[in-house]
Each structure stands twice: as structure tokens, then as C-alpha cells.
Image (tube, rainbow, N blue to C red; front, side, top):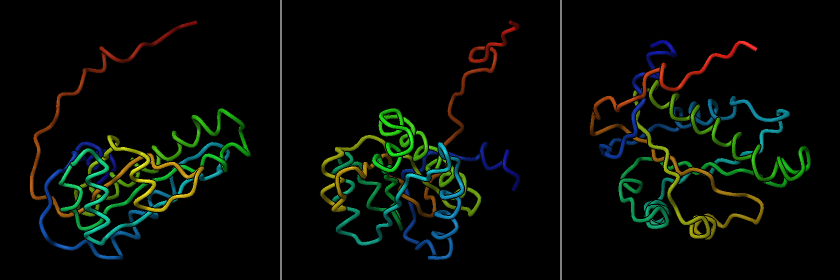
Length: 173
């Protein structure tokens, strides 16, 4: 499958079969995440991998009771190291670049999952302090995304996407 097919097939999967995702596939997904671009190549991310039922349950609760999270074989929490980015770029690094960098890594994870025949969902709605407490994260390491991954038990239809003519503006200055 080429990259454009992977992009077109990516969907937010919120129902999973009980089949376990192999460690090899989890490592491929994490490797894809670490290959994402980052400001100044600082790579200000940490990935927390959760497989235990209790941890996944607590993450689901922190994510406003989105129960599909605990049904996934594996859940990866993408964290941004604010202090690492701040050392390179000051306030802008701490408040913007590390979030952008973590977002790029998250998208790479989603695309890698599709390429492996898996499904995933980018979950951004969660109580940050609850996630921090569940994972015992130190201050400065900010959870940005919760990514449940597993074998899909659904095949969502293609969501509406705005036409290029609506969203692209070409300027000639």
C-alpha cells in the first residue's frame, strides 16, 4: 500500500476485536513516531505504552469515559517534553513547538497503524491531570494525545472532507 492509500484509508477507529497487537507491530508504530519531524530536531516526545487493563481503564475514565480506549489491545500516550523544547526555543518551544512535534509523531503513528492493518484513534479530549496522575508523569512532560490501537471491529465510512477549492488560496505577490 503506498502512502496515499494509507492516508485515504485512515479512519478514527473506536471499536476493536480482542486480537492482540504484536510487540513487533507496536515497535514499528513507535519507530514511525520517532521519525516525525521536530523543531530543531529536538525530538521532545516520550511515548508511554499501556497494555494493562487497569491502566487502560483509568485512561478511558480520564478521557471523559471514552470506553473504547480500554478495549484496544494497546494504548500509547504521546507526551511533549516542554522543558526540552524550551531549552532550544524558549517560551515558543515550551508552548507551541513541542505540541506541534508531538502532533506530528501522533499522525505518523496513525498512518503506521493503517499500514499494518490496524486501527487507531487520536483522542485529545481528556483531563490532563488525571492522565498525568495515572501515568505518574513528572511536571514538564505534558500528555498531548491518547492513541488506542488494535484490530478494527468496524469500517467507518469516508468522512466528509471540504473541497480543495474551499481551503486553498494561491497568492501571487
